[in-house]
Amino acid sequence: MIDHFRMFAAYNSWANGRIYAAAQALGAEGRHRETGAAFGSLHATLNHLPATDRIWMKRFTGQGEAPTTLDAVLFDDFADLTEARVAEDRRIARWIDSLTPDDLAGVFTYTPISIPEPISQRLSPCLAHLFNHQTHHRGQCHMILTTLGQPSVVLDLAFFLRSDRA
Image 1 (tube, one colour):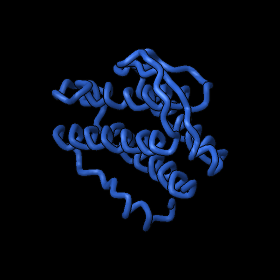
Image 2 (image 1 turned 30 degrees about the vertical axis):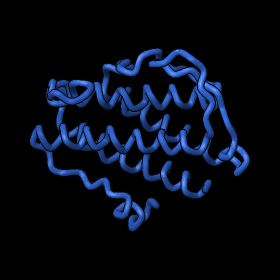
Image 3 (image 1 turned 90 degrees about the horizontal axis):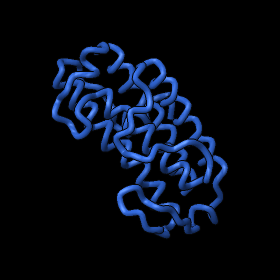
């Protein structure tokens, strides 16, 4: 199971890199354009992901800064946002590398932002949620990019597994 999550950590970093490269090519005006997506713009959606990653990593590890809202815009500057995304992907991968099978089978307790009451859950399904959540919002980013005229970004896991980065 740990190898499964290591694969997803590597895929996550790879896919984020591809989305960020396409976002860079779009330019600042396009990244900030309101599109009707869940968080409004590509820039806001891209900010949502490191925000929620920080929230989950704080829950998982008890360490790091975490915003108190899901729509927090952590970085106005795209270069800073990109740098933070890379750092967070590395942090996630390092933490997964430190896990044991007992850790994955264990239970942890956290307090959700939306329901401020403690919840206890197994770590493994919540870690799966972390990566599924990334995939969900990268799909939204893909839709925003293509709506704004950018070429489609290949994000398939199977394509990643055939690459030299897997």
